[in-house]
Length: 111
Length: 114
Image 1 (cartoon, chains in turn green, brown):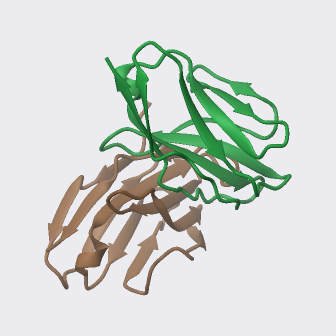
Image 2 (tube, rainbow over the protein chains, first blue to last red):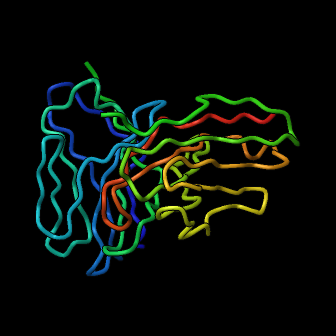
């Protein structure tokens, strides 16, 4: 699976949009971009995933560049409960089951 | 509905002892995963079960670690002759099937080896 690069930490004001970047320049054609987050002392939680089209669900939006070498997770109205470590993971489709986590981005939402 | 549960939530043991960590997956989920998370790191894959069989145990660090899932539901991770380096949070996840399906994680068991 392709390696990802994320900033170590980011801050965001409560109520504003949080934009979390991820670089995955070696991604191949059949690899998906997944985002999970981990709130302190909890297990990781799935957020969203995509292949090449932008995706949106009730939690977030995922914007993938046309060349697929980077993506951005957008939390449209961050709340204090969104403070967590956010992991960007690139994973092959089909039978690949492993999630390979990096160190992620610690997002701190400030009041 | 009930999520993935793990017991105990915390376990303190002495170096050299044997420990068992239990995972109850979401009902009906055929795939089950174990991960280990050290302080400041992301979770690291250990083993994947599809049904009762271990489809991939390549992440187990050595032969002191073993996991079973005899009836295709509950799984137990077993660690023999524990070492201080085994101290970590052990996470279990389940998914409806293997592959692309979303993995649902439990809260983890924090293992401390003294």
